Image (cartoon, rainbow, N blue to C red; front, side, top):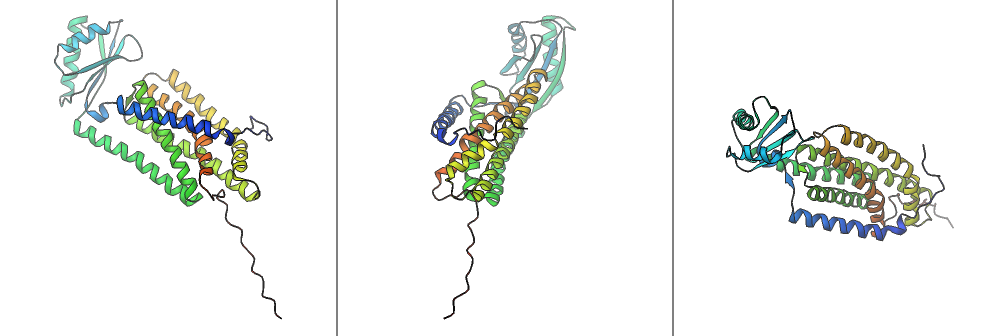
Amino acid sequence: MEFFRPDLNFDFVGKRRIFIGISCAAVLLSFVLLATRGLNYGIDFVGGTIVQVAFKEKKPIGDIRGAVSALNLGDALIQEFGSDREFLIRVKEFRSDVEGVDKRIAGALEKSFGKGSLEIRRTESVGPQVGEDLKRKAMSSLIFACIGILIYVGLRFRFVPAAASIVALLHDVIITMGILSLTGKEFNLPIVAAVLTIIGYSINDTIVIFDRIRENTRLSRRSELGEVINSSINQTLSRTILTGGTTLLTLLAFFFLGGEVIADFSFILIVGIIIGTYSSIYVASPILLAFPGYSGGAAAPRRSKKAPVRA
């Protein structure tokens, strides 16, 4: 199935300086956001207790905050969760007696709003040492994923495409983290899984384009590398749109219909899929032109050995 005519030729390579400039600005802005605002780490990484409360009727969040603050549980963060009757209460202090925290919060809320006016839907607790360990392992998983991809692409396409693909992956991860910081969405283990999914999706899209570049280089050795890259991106454009479009439709359904539990996970995947598709076309492929002498990954032609002429 093709969305574009085979003879259509968008000048992706010719506009590379504009889009590389946009990418550099986005990466720089992401670094600034991460340095100034940071990430909103969830209890998976900082430790603490989370209680999900559902009321039978709409309740003012200020009254809920007042009832919880009277318990002296430390800094408590209270936010709506999906509706104006359901709330998440986060206490960023670890409590070994999770059920005790659960009951104390329920008792304080029932004292303020009446007995039987609420239901405790969920209670979770993570210790600070476990949170630090999970944070280290999450960052290690991202680093090892990039190293593994570098080795794989290097063995398959040589060093230059491997370097270009890693630059594109770092571009995707940094901008995604910047958007996480900008929106203030919680950075937890499901979000780490989403980032790893983005890395896999992005490298798959990049490899498809690199494969076509290698094939076209072997078929048209006299063409310039820029022309080969441009035609290769155009030839795979229908596949890129079809794959990205169907994935986005699924993620949009999860985002709007899946509820608050997977909303942040779906949101990050939507952002990552868009950025990953963009980087495969406007970041990874044009970077190949920055390496003098790169020929597109095609093997050098073998010279036939002629028998010596006897006098």
